Image (cartoon, rainbow, N blue to C red):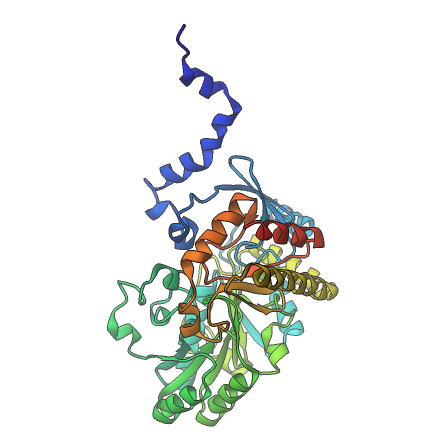
Length: 439
């Protein structure tokens, strides 16, 4: 008697194991590469990406019902863990009465007032919809305020996909090996100056040559897109001094670090007062959100008060504002959260370094508070873009495959950060380390 294996496979529960692959493959017919952001394609690690259907606390579940310990946290926003009850309740409550108006709401005021009264150097703020919008708008404002054209950025720092910043960027551009991006005209980037991260002599030279033309300098005080690479304190201090000396605006891109490394961001740790700050990720509670703010005299150059135009139909969306307010308010009221997640990160770092020593792995761990990257780097240091480019991405891919096949969800790119949340536990860290030890 012949057996119809097709019917058996259809009835067998194991057939559900094809869901991830089927969804991803069909997605390629309708979205470039099957994704809406390149890093999600897992191209450089040769793995079919899990298709996520649920997040709960520190864990994710895919369409095949696999469970993962999440060290990505939506690339940073989920500091309270997935589906925090207070955030979900705020979203539900708001959605019953308001989805979108394109008009002024009290929720905008609540979040703006809270940020301006609890975060240093935020005298006024403008809400937008993403980190990219925040950084591109801050650059336009800096140019409008100073009457100058040139913007300085640093190699390896990623400030979104705005044309003027997509030069020597990190993250996906570095992973893909793209020297920028096609479709960015040379005339757009002619006013972008690329400086070397953590190089005092280099930034001094740039200011000596172009100082009177520089409208602003934008920097991630802690880079998260060439992996986690903190600024050296003396470097940031000199950058601040140069901006003041030449009349350029200092812009801190705290899209990733805002409300993450400390409630008041990296600026509060370094003791630097930037002129403008950009935010996103955590401040939206996981929903699409961004903001830029700073000195009142600069912000009042924005329309409708001043001559610099920037607008957005969905800026200040009520559901987003409610999620953001619930998130930052909870963080503000629970300062102990920051010590808790940093202690977990310290435990994770020490464990990874011990395993690397035991196994003779060429690993260097860069950590800043609850952000961390495991670099596979023979030279034992990553202080800038050039150091990051020396990492062994093939070895990282092997590490990634081992971890994700054992239920650890982390970045498929060597050049990203791992993020911890208040829902992670010491047991979760032990689980990560036990799995890593079995490589």
